[in-house]
Each structure stands twice: as C-alpha cells, then as structure tokens.
Length: 322
Ligand code: 5GP
Image: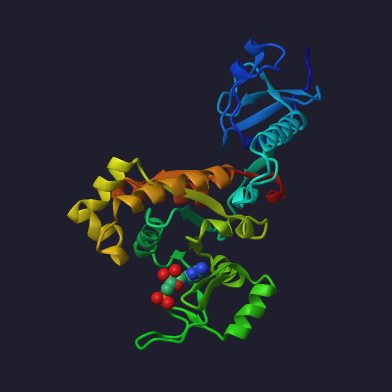
C-alpha cells in the first residue's frame, strides 16, 4: 500500500542480532545492526517492534528491530538479573555510562560558513591524541587552534602568561569550576589545571577549528548544543603492533616527545585496557575512530575527517539541528 514512511533517523547505541534474539516473532524478518549504525525508522506503529533499514542500504527492505520501549525493558531486566547473580550491585564508574543506551534520534547537521565544530580527540593516555592534535595545528596554525589552559601553579621562568597557561589563583579557579565555567579540570601535584568553555567558544567565534584532547571524562560536559563537538576516538592497535610502532627508534622520537624512555609492556597493556574501557563507556558518542598504529596514516585519516566535518552535512543529535 501507499503507507507513508516516517523520516526518523536514529543512531543505535547497542549491537543487535535477531539470530540470537529469543523474543523476535520471526528471525528472518529481523534487521541486524551494530552500535553506531544510523537507522532509518520506517514505522513505529507497533509498540514492541519497529521497522527499520540501515541508512547505508536505502533500497533494502525494512526489517524488525526492538522498539525503544522494548530495549529499555530488556536492559533493565538484564541489569536486575546480573545484580541478583552478583549480589550487591557494583559501585564503579559504570554509571558514567548513559543509564539506558538504546537509540538516539539524529539529523543532518549542515556546516555553517565560518563557524566550525570543535573537534575532540579522545583516547587512552599515550595512544597519541596530543601528538595528532599538535600535527594538525602545525599544518595550519591559522585555522586549527587549542585553548590555552588555566592553572593555579606558579609561572616558571621562560613561560609567558597567556601563552603556556593562564595563571590564576586557586580561589578564583575553584569558584569558576563551581560555577560550571570549565569543560574539564584536574589536579596535578597539588595544582589545578583546566580548560574553560569560554576559551573554546572564543576560538569558534574567531572562525577557527577548536581542537581539544581532554580526558574522556570531559565528554559529557562537552557534548552540548552550544558546542556541537565532533568526537573522535583515537585507538591503539593490538599489543604486538602497538609495541612495534612505539619501540622502533624512528617512531619513538615522533610518537611521544615527553616519554623518550619509551613504554613498558605493562604500559602498553594498560593503554589497550583503557581504550576498551573508553569504548565501553562512551563508544556510542564517537562520530569517528582512528586507529593510531602508523602515525603518518593516522594523521592522514584525521586530516580527511576534519575536512569532512568542515564541509559536509553529518549526523548529529537531532536536538542540535534547528
Ligand atoms: P606542567 O605544570 O608541567 O605544565 O603540567 C603538568 C601536567 O598538568 C600535565 O602533564 C597535565 O597532566 C596537566 N595539565 C596541563 N594542562 C591541563 C589541562 O588543560 N587540563 C588538565 N586537566 N590537566 C592539564
């Protein structure tokens, strides 16, 4: 019949395989998808089973997927079962993860002339996100800029106020953190460090691409309609390749200037573990991934991605699109 299709697009926040779903009325009618896939929801008429197709397969016939309500119920059920099995519910940063990750409604965000989305590089420490950021700025310092961080530590000889850091008193910085003026902050050797939302905005308003490489815990504070950031996960390759690419004498000097001694096997293992954890907690927020095995290849991919962010309409939370 001439049924009208809904225009709703969502980004899936979980993997789905109808083959192993005991509840689906008909396995053959199901649509498999992976976290991060953009789905066109063709019909939401049934409260349990939506009809959808992958956005990348426009001509395919629609298949059944669990509705948001059904998936939410399942997540709550699975969580309860797990808590019963494990006894007391575990108290760790798992609750950093969105309480119930199902589907996020998305729409195409069109680039605005002269206003660029901030590009945020997230990754485990040591994987190379700062090096990638530095290279992009070095390639075109007029266009790519990072905010000058604030700190409460005293200025060192050779430093210039406003160049390395904006130096402030602890009282001032604590008050500003309290007032929500920082997108991220941390403490190191008894001093506060952080990046203010205002300095990100001023780079954007100056018509530059703001590059950030904060701790992954800053994702939630950054992901706002005001900033509309583009998030990239910088991932390490598997152990052998990670070790090889970071131990090779040539790579070592370019990969991490601040870590000339190189990394231990344990540090490589920690990087991989940390990356898996970031993916578990925040994987559904990333717009792109870059595998940083060979630095030159990873940088090429970054250049390619930022080019697209600056020029192409891309999927973003629909609440960011007016
Ligand atoms: P330094 O005092 O030697 O310039 O920096 C020491 C450390 O401060 C850095 O290695 C880093 O861990 C931390 N740091 C520097 N800038 C920032 C920032 O903008 N935010 C946070 N959270 N930490 C920073």
